[in-house]
View 1 (cartoon, rainbow, N blue to C red):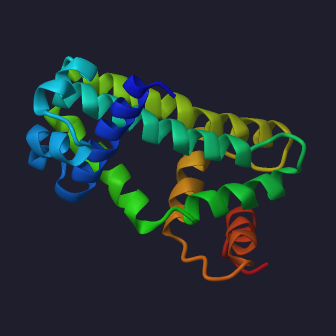
View 2 (cartoon, rainbow, N blue to C red; view 1 turned 60 degrees about the vertical axis):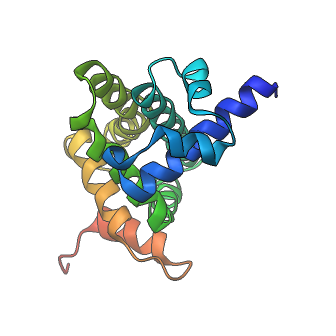
Length: 185
């Protein structure tokens, strides 16, 4: 990694730390610089658009990370139930700080330009929501689930996120509840 990349990553880490702590409006680029160990003008060397460019870079990095974890959970060589269990574990296993950080990214969308908002939303849709929707489309086509794939994706991700998985059987229970429902047979 080049020194340029190291500095850029340090700036992004400092920005992400402030975003998590204070939200977008509370971010001070001077404080970001101090945390990263550089002068504020150096931030503009790496991120010419300042705060909004940093927001984009940090949001993209976070979304890519989530997307990679979800993609790994959806690997095709296992059956649908196994993949759903892994997906549930990934989503439910996000730490509270991660969920709060994701909420901070979302909350900032109304504070940035329309172009930035559209870009970050598209990144989230393309890297997180679309692959899970494609998985549910495939599962529907295989006859494993019924219903509209985007609705199934949303319902499953919200259910998994809300779950308190305190033991190893949690993902299996979420999948069973999702696939079988809660109605007695």
